[in-house]
Length: 184
Image (cartoon, rainbow, N blue to C red; front, side):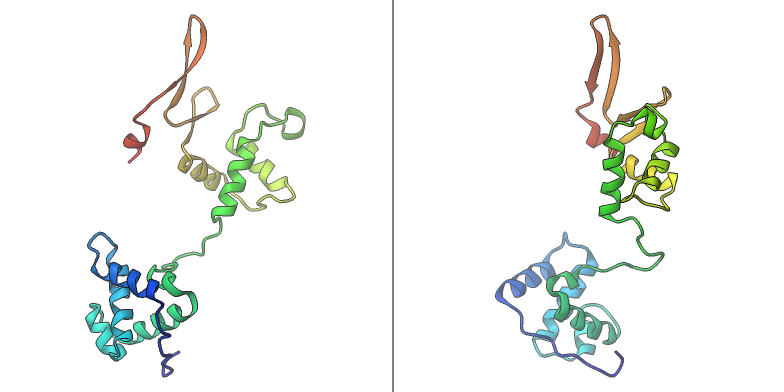
């Protein structure tokens, strides 16, 4: 794209209001504020280099890329994309698939277990027709941990903040009301 400068399409009233709000916000991430300021400066007729400096940047090339991205995706251009590193392999759909399989009660004959371990869950996910053929136990553990599940000494999974206690009347599920506060 070097050498080619795409002109900014006109804002809708809603886009202008949102960009103005973001550019003035102190609670927004700095990258969002800078991008909003650059887009507003370009919309005011300033060259890309001046708009870059108004947003606290040095070069106008990044503003040219931002304008091109804004023309394609709209306000989503304010939020940074994938910042490098390996590509995301297991996104939201794959994570949901792992959790769906985990929530299914294992069949002793089909799955070879009465309770899920990381390895048996991995085996089930890899064997399923709509499964994940290359999923690792580490990825499964991460997804379950992020969803609030922990593996217990008795080789069962327990949701964070929930515990089963033995009482005279039988087993009682006890909930910790401060689970979210303790997690953060």
